[in-house]
Amino acid sequence: MSAASSTPTADGRIVLAHGGGGELTRRLVAERFLPKLGNALLSPLTDSAIIDVPAGRAAMTTDAYVVQPLEFPGGDIGRLAVCGTVNDLAVMGARPVALSLAMILEEGLELAVLDRVVDSIAAAAAEAGVVVATGDTKVVEHRRGDGLMITTAGIGEMTGEIRQAPDRIRPGDVLLINGPIAEHGLAVMSAREGLHFDTDLRSDVAPLNGLIAALLGCGADVRFMRDATRGGLAAVAADVAEASSLSVELDEAAIPMTRTARHASELLGLDPLLVANEGKVVVVVSGADTSRALAAMKAHPLGRHAAVIGRVTQARPAVVELLTRAGGRRLVQRPYGEELPRIC
Image 1 (cartoon, rainbow, N blue to C red):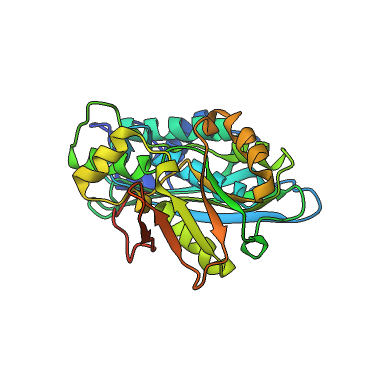
Image 2: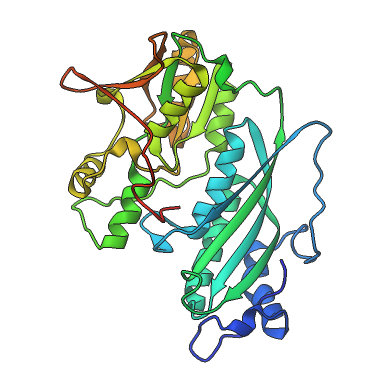
């Protein structure tokens, strides 16, 4: 992890000198990162990590995280960064192996906040079974970095043939999701706006690689998978329709959602289909394998509330329709922009 450090400053905050490459940088890494994230790949602090990848193909992904606030009910920017990268690998059918972690710290960030985020990164990585293999730390001037920003990249091992692709989707296939929607975006927005509800509204942020491995191992013909992050369930369904040139029908009554999330959506004037999730995967599976796939998902802790939420049809033109509780139909489209900014 490129230098950055920490003897606590007088007021327990990051200062520009922490990013200068000198003694303070060395201490920041040695005292705040390595004790929690250190491993055989990261601890030597070389310019890059050498990773053993079996002969064959590997998957690679990268993402940046700028969520505000940095900590929110159910998670924080650190857990979000690990889980988001792990999930992007897992939905491709890859086994996540290692991550890189680049942290941009703003001058004035409380070291106590940094410590909590690093603890969260370590816990999420352990939960997902990955290591932080390499990284970098930079410090920017006050009011130029929103406290903390993180960029991660991940490498995963492709353990078999890639079979999850939109061109494999067929009429009669069904759509499944592993649990209630809209919780992440609503939890972040509620924390940002200071909203409180009778029941806790918590982000669903979680690493999905274990659930997905169980699903792929059950023998069901999984056609396509995607985690429903920005743009929510609506964006994934729209991608399925566009890429396959087939229509998608979603059943509003079958889509899992907590009463608190529904109430928060109404209060904020948001369509929950468009709200981001960070622990939900949408799966398209052969109709003949519906029961097998659903049982595999329900057997995993992150899939206890899995449900069949729709189906693929031959209707033309290729659109996404929601079958409403009232018995009507309405078109579902991707959001034009981002309804909830800075949620991941």
